[in-house]
Image 1 (tube, rainbow over the protein chains, first blue to last red):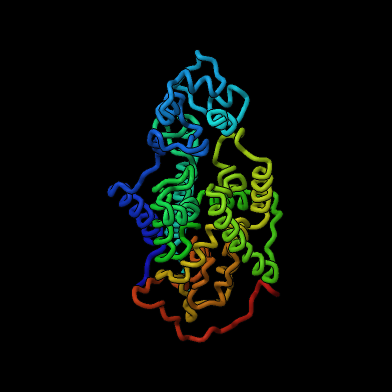
Image 2: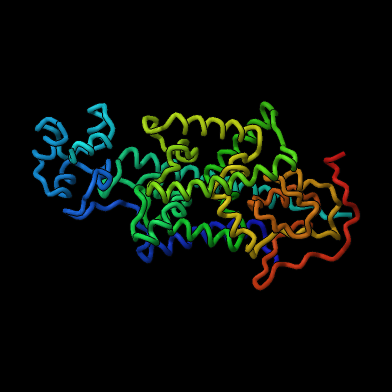
Length: 103
Length: 291
């Protein structure tokens, strides 16, 4: 069966988009990371740079002041800031910052 | 007298493919920018890695064995991998020719250089063929290191990520050097990364031979001008084949566009078996480019 070149292009895009669309419709298209369940964090690797102080506090089941103290950050630090942002502000890396929580 | 191909149709085909590539380049750039602007996690936007087809291959083993995803990857990677592998299995490596943003950038760089500086190089078969095996070595190395380290080991070296990540502070020196060399080589050799180093291309090579849609050369009307071979961005000798089943074929259809005789190169779908080549003998086998 002969296929016109332009139709071929449409088949390529339609097939690719169709499968992704099918994945979206069936709920398999998951892009956003979810917060680790409370009490499941074993090491700094389980903490992500996008986590805010509030989220770290929830995940580690520690009060926010304790988290800030372990991170060696001022008590006035905004708890909605992410570890990545704070690491940049502190001129360190997110990995170094996370490691402080497990020292 | 030979029939001329419809000029409007070839222009439409060129434009359609370039629009498709431009769309995916813009989409990836937007996804990356959105992540940098909003951050990651449930409150932000997913990183570029989550929208990478190769990320699906990298995280597949971990997902099968542990039910978890490697950091920065997610179920979307597996959906993308499924879409790409299905596409390649049915239509050949058309993902590379119609969708891949990094392939598009390379293609555009080569075109700019070809028009402005005109410093291009077409490697001989003796160089080209062995170098293509590098892709498989790289694919094996990445998959091994990804499983060993349980992380996206390649991200620090990935020129695709270096180019589209939009966060210079996270770029590694090695990654910048690899990106620089890749873009420089793309200026001189058409789609150099795709042909010699792309691990995703290596993966596609395993599925592309199953393609049900292939380019057929009709010997009866072929005038052996070799315009098709000359036009091919991945150096397939189209003029010497009845059916192009080369797994390297990215289905850019440039051979069809450049063919001066209408309906001499066609796209044929075989739902049950590969299309049979025409039986008319070829009048000449001499390659005009070699003289």
